[in-house]
Length: 399
Image (tube, rainbow, N blue to C red):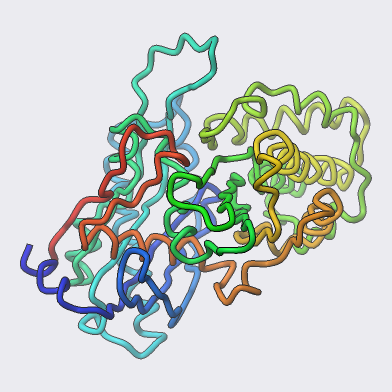
């Protein structure tokens, strides 16, 4: 542990945050200069890159996410292979920045989620499965191949304490964005959309957060299907802008039990992945919707589930003054326009307006979490995840 202990005396550290989300479109790597820790945390983004997975790897990962075809030997190998790809991402961003491994103090790696089985908090749930989560991207491989101390596997400690294991970004969100005079919302629209609400002049205990439902996941899956892989997402929301949402279908989809669960709650590919997206596409076809109308309808589902969550679960005294949006969805102009229209009393803005990169925000968050873990600070917020206690997150791996 000497490599970690020596870092404790450094007030300013250079940390790389690594993240791959439910969209499985690549590895986000952010080099972050972090000053202080806890409430004194300040960050400066030095570099950010997204490294696309090699051809065929996203499909292999998606196959492993499916319980019917995911094999234990393939999962075992993928854990180490993803660790290798994460290490390669570190090497590439250092080379592009003109830096060396010796310039980096620490790596914080989220890994790639293969399966997430949070506790079902609905009253009629009889699910006997033990709550659990699995992120691959072996940190021992990352540490060995880069020579940099690594902290990873952040979600499991929160789930061990009865939490949902997400959203973990709520704690970094509080450190970076809480304000005294206005309530701030942080909405990340990746494969799944999640929202953190920071009440004005609030404490850790006042923070609320949850997944609101599908973000880009269903839109991306349907576009990939209808274009036979020629397109993988709705660039700038142009397809959605050319179609008309079919509200009758959206009203049916909004009956899904997840949308009515009270927070804290999380979801993922297990609930809103490829199977669900294809069911939505079949429903669109039954109503003779054009391709662009299908995309517009799924885009509107994302927007309405976010707006409905805010209407149902954000209290009147904590009405959001400013909603900062990050993730891939921030680039979807149709989605952003509709959010602004439905949330007319809230200023809906890209998080870039705050000085934090929208694309890099989650990678930055895991750099911060690694720094907090190094200093022995708890990195979860029970009010956001539902855990029984605050926990120090992650596992230490020496190079």
